[in-house]
Length: 386
Image (cartoon, rainbow, N blue to C red):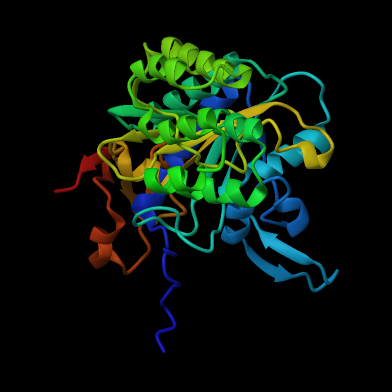
């Protein structure tokens, strides 16, 4: 038995990658902080009934579960941090006004959620609670774009949808839970014949609208077509106004690759605008999020909320390589006061200094140092290593 093997889609993070990830994490969290977002650190484990409250079936399937040896109750290893943040906002902070929160931590999932993805993403994200208008959606998307820029991710484009359109159509037709689930699956698969067959007993207007949703995909002209093709329900008109406002306010920051009115990602979780950012031709979304006004309802406070999350591993892999730090090799002389002062001064400036252990000169190449400290005319100076 190979005891060093890890489970599928679980990997170690080795020094080079770990260094890049930590640099990105620090930059992004520092930027969140100067924008007024307060850092939270929720626990890795919670009771399942709390962890999955209001999140729908998909997150339940993604959650590892185990029995608590102390209470006998079922515990879950978090697969997403947002439900935890909603619980904290609702019950621990208990504020009435706008609250800006952010987080960074590991999550664990039963299955990878994309091509070549890990089951242990390092999730980082930001959320706004307590504001219902489009202004908070704009703010979190601008913050997301800044985070991608800080990570060195270029050529970013965004896909935007709105789950309230599909919901409004089903509510108007008073469809059953079973039919709703079937229509949702067909819409996710963009299966137009299946949508038409499932909707055959609904009224003519709803049938036509549902059949048109998978085709309402493209540039800003999609919103004009949608106003013409979809029923003039208040919820649908409001959704289209929100999408139009987002398009105008983000035009100077990012290319909106498409509006997709049939996109229902996180349908059981999100309640309004949903978005995903793509970059550098990579198949997986670099960031995704949306509005989830109902997520805190089960905690007793259905506060309006919007936010986004990213995987630090994906960011570090997709971003431009950070500037390589110039490491310095120092001899092992603990009794040399001048040397120790010089080392302390370099480290105070953020320069990495590695003291070489006695008898290990032949392994210097493994220390990855570009310079070394040598004594010249009574002073310790830096010399380039050939």
